[in-house]
Image 1: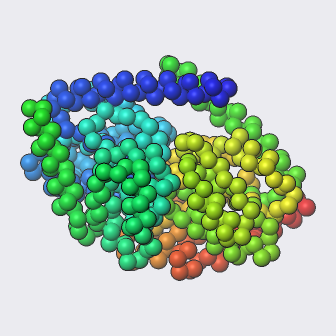
Image 2 (image 1 turned 90 degrees about the vertical axis):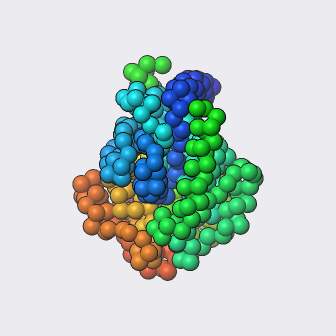
Image 3 (image 1 turned 45 degrees about the vertical axis):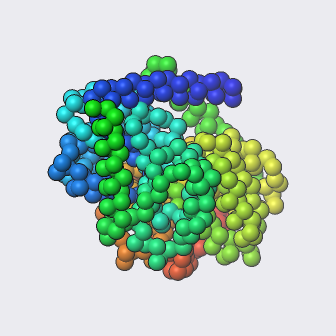
Amino acid sequence: MSEQQKITIVQNILNANDGLAQQNRDQLLKARLFSINMMASPGAGKTTLIEKTLQAFTPDHRVLVIDGDIATTLDADRAAKAGASAIQINTGGDCHLDAIMLHRALSQVDLFNYDLLIVENVGNLVCPASFELGTERKVLIASVPEGDDKPHKYPGMYRGVDVVVLNKTDLLPYVDFNFEFFSKGLQVLNPNVQVIPLSCRTGEGLKDWFEWLGNELDEFRKNHC
Amino acid sequence: MSEQQKITIVQNILNANDGLAQQNRDQLLKARLFSINMMASPGAGKTTLIEKTLQAFTPDHRVLVIDGDIATTLDADRAAKAGASAIQINTGGDCHLDAIMLHRALSQVDLFNYDLLIVENVGNLVCPASFELGTERKVLIASVPEGDDKPHKYPGMYRGVDVVVLNKTDLLPYVDFNFEFFSKGLQVLNPNVQVIPLSCRTGEGLKDWFEWLGNELDEFRKNHC
């Protein structure tokens, strides 16, 4: 296959994906269901942050979690245990979720039964950035031990998100992490993005994340109800 | 594009890649150049381990480092600074190196001038596992803060490697990491694989990694010189 053909096929796949993402977005809006796509490197703490979020939000909200994973149901099991309805998508080796996978998952439930949809993407800082799912907001969970150079090295991911959670701040005393260098990389790519430093382990900063999510939820409901 | 066509195209790409990987392997053997493909999640410490390895091996060995990155030359700069010849491959967004990228990089230098080739793959626990490059050995660098569930969640990667380095052991007192759960996941996928726990930060365990690499190098030279 020539380079040109390869590029055309990739482009076609991405165009088809964007069309389906728009359908997902329309479907979610119709059901007045606020949705976030959570992306991160493996081990940054997506599932743990989702557990903490469920503890805070399930008393007052009906939450649906859709978990993308290559092989196991470990993450969906944890979400279900923490009080959410959970659907597992096994990507069968694919390194990202795409709009059609989400579309199939959404068709399994009555979306009108939920207020908040959390989509947990596959752990990967590259491809998930290229595949729109149709969620209202995109969240990146970075983590301190990954290092401060990640915005510089994964620009596609850092450029396209609405908020950056910086998890595992409790490890700051034990690793070399220069917050200025991290922010400088981020500033170039996504100048107005909010950064929320927190530690799922100690709980420090979690209230800022809950506040961000609560405000976004309220704003969405005000605009769409 | 139907699912069937998609599967066929992916399969064709992988078959073409394997053929080229074999060509790379032949070329490296001809030059008696021992080679490793280092794979890991973003931020597991590939570049730092390569720096430490260069400090230990450049006095007695001529080392070539080929760095795969999406956008920057940060890693190749660090390898060059640490005393190796370094070539940067910018994948232009691709989430893994493939055999043709390595083939092009190899053609830029006289391979007979080197004893050890270190290929640093793109930070990703999914796709690099599917693309053979033609190196003699495959090394996975895991890290303690990523969590003990990673073999369970990224089986393709953990199944296919010759050695697992477990980096950042200095963080064990500060995170929840159950070595038994980690080993259990690994045992199922790759029963005889050696695990080398170490900390690039404190230096603890580095000698075991140097010993593994030195032994592999010696064995290779004995068989191919």
